[in-house]
Image (cartoon, rainbow, N blue to C red; front, side):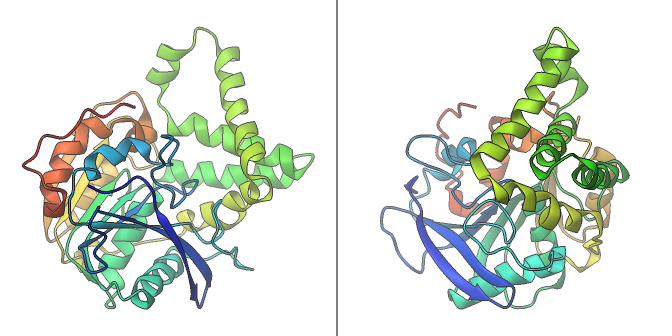
Length: 314
């Protein structure tokens, strides 16, 4: 089975040093099939941990039974992990190129699948559409589309205004993260979870304080180096030749159904489109793993789709 402990590595690229993690099956074969897993901008390459605190821990049960696969994940350049922060923010295309260069330097050009949630899905689309260094067999996209939604672009623009006009950098980070949390979840989720708006306000502010407390200066780069890239990208789905699976979430305002449906129609080889009803909005790609686990395992043959998947606890 794929172990929940990743071996870290560093690779120098033209855009800075990239830190990554390799999660291998018990056999640990260096030439085992490769699946790249990338999450959102606030994620790290530490997908899974023994203590259950990995960034995408809920996804681990999907990969754990695979007996001959290696999972690769990267800390984002300018993100909260161990990769460098470039002097200038990178574009989506430059981010994708940096991680492609990393895989090439590792000798991993035959990629069985790229599984990307949110920002990770955008990068997967970018690579599949424009990169000829990698032989990408399959692409799974969760909560992402080929261009930003107008609402998500407004959100990120307003975050920049908060950073510029806050009394200090720390306050700006807290408010920007609080605004992000407001849009990552749906109105229904807030109605179900809180009895008063003041309680909800305290919750989203606490999430901003938590980000700042856990990541310090790096929390600021999420908004100066990563979020701006997502306001200015456009990927031509017609250039994506590999089979693609799209997972969309009904209440997602960052990658709304209108955009993911458009992406489905424009792709030459859309294998499947899965729409999930959830109150969790954009965070559905993390919170609703149990709802898309089985079709995902069927889409990526290396995940041994014929075996019984263990229960996934969110």
